[in-house]
Image 1 (cartoon, rainbow, N blue to C red):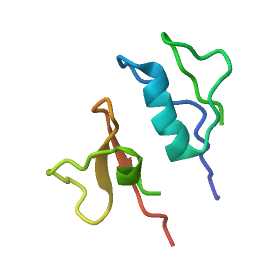
Image 2: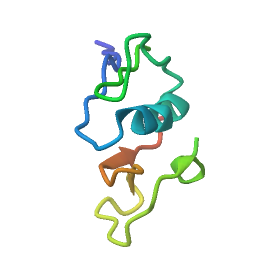
Image 3: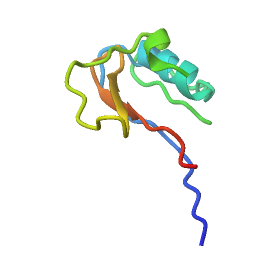
Length: 83
């Protein structure tokens, strides 16, 4: 059985929702939700370092995945596609 997952939402607590939403908008290709403002920003819909992400020194995944942090310091992982 082939299972496909679809990303439906990204929820983060941060000081500047619109700035962080712009980062993830560029990273994922999602569109900024029209009701976004200074209190809440939503996204409805490759290289993270070029988008303002940082690469922590500690990389627990070895070659299996790369850990980066977004501009607010939240970690996320880049995982190569399976072949």
